[in-house]
Amino acid sequence: MKSDNKKIEQKTTNPKQAKVESENQEYAELVVVKPVGYPFDFNMMDEDIEIKNTRLFEEYARDQWSGLVVRENSHLFDQKIIPDYGFEVVIAKPNNSMISENTKIKIITDDIKNTFENKIKTDIHLNDIVGQKNAKSKVKVITKYLEDPERFGPWAPKNILFYGLPGTGKTMLVKALANELEVPLYLIKATSLIGEHVGDASSKIHDLFKRASENAPSIIFIDEIDAIALHRSFQSLRGDVSEIVNALLTEMDGITENKSVITIGATNNAGSLDYAVRSRFEEEIEFKLPDDNERLEIIENNLKTMPLEYDLDLEKIVRLTKGLSGRDLKEKILKTALHNAISNDSETITMANIDYALKSSKIKNLDVKGMFE
Image 1 (cartoon, one colour):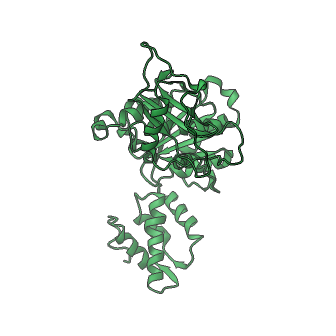
Image 2 (cartoon, helix red, strand yellow):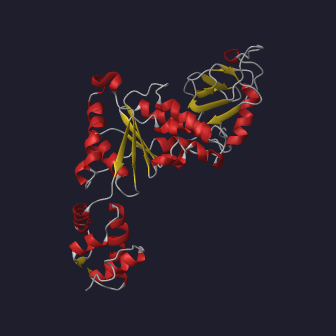
Image 3 (cartoon, helix red, strand yellow):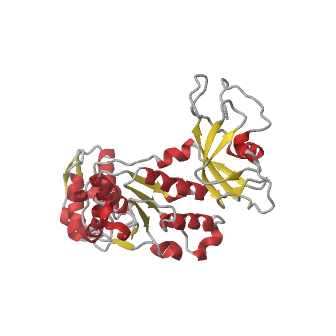
């Protein structure tokens, strides 16, 4: 927990952290802290500390903080480092409770912190997204709100659900939205919020929303949200589902005010979501597969950046790729065809390469059989 140049001193008492003895004091189930540094500069001190073993830290912290009453947004001090190193209490469950030998103490480490500082910046614009007219129309309310939050007052949009088949543009749309509004985008894979120990997930969720609030206006995008907010019929598959769902509900309900923070969840299967979580989304926006005209436009846009020449029947490709998403068109058809042409030392992409891509992708289409007739 300390570097070699830190002086250690054993202390027996500390007036800042007097232990409380009370029969009526409620004991803490979970305390989540984050390192915030020393109270003043000291030229022999490193500002940051390195936690190499979170389980060992938990025992270390519990040993010296047992008997202390903790409140969220207050501070605890490590009494064994000179000067006392400070930790902010991010979560105290329940609040205003006493640390005991059974309290779980978790620390927000740099890897978690870096995850939530992942503010995405891209060059994608709404005009780059082909189709999805309904989705683009509905997100206008987010645009209007983030441009002038005060105007909406209690009518502000808070929680939006994007749902639809994979590759239909859910992530692309939120990137474009954040880019055009020039606001921070916290793009998180839901699985990255799952921790190794009980309490990890809820602390990650609360810290994510806190960081977004500190940098508001901002957008939180939780991709594959069903991975952490499963329907109750699936909860037996993972023991920490209730903890995660409760943490999400707390943030989505605005118990901790997250002013000018929009939460967007994305899922391929809205029906698998926990009902309590799904009910918090005031708007559900469906993303649909592209129609013939949209697939043609997607193909034409992608061909503009092709590194090889091409001799293709675009209308036939559109017909053969019915039911494919925009991502499938690019990744499974055009990219595979390109790689097949290169591997065969060809300088031109032909329909034979497209045929190879269709078969490699195991796309079933009655037209494939007679594509060269």
